[in-house]
Image 1 (cartoon, rainbow, N blue to C red):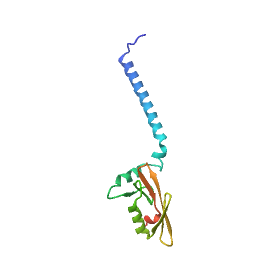
Image 2: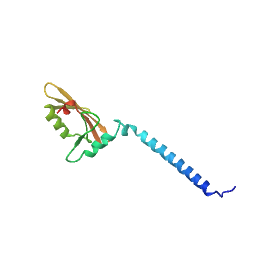
Image 3: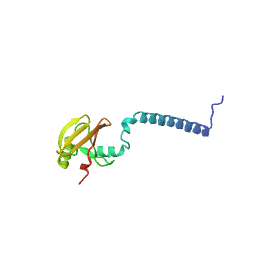
Image 4: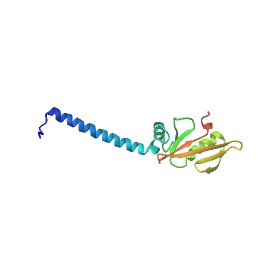
Length: 134
């Protein structure tokens, strides 16, 4: 068996090995990505949520998410600043928490702010449209 390959054959074999290794890593990455699909893509396109997460700081504990009116993101847990802003805007007072829903009432209308954990680090808040009204 002749193992003396020309430089063209060595280059071709090297490219073939690199291509094969690249395909294997791509498949492994895709498998990892889609095995965590519920976490990564649980609310669709993650880019607006990442942009909102970058705007959160000590001075700004929550940020609007550009996916529709009334969607906000905060660090995981309660966000009293968001509740205060809602109460000021709506004139409603906090009534009670029922699971992931926070109930508010102004005596005539009832409002629900719902929450869900996002990526294990953040909370997504869905507020009534009254917050969008200026």
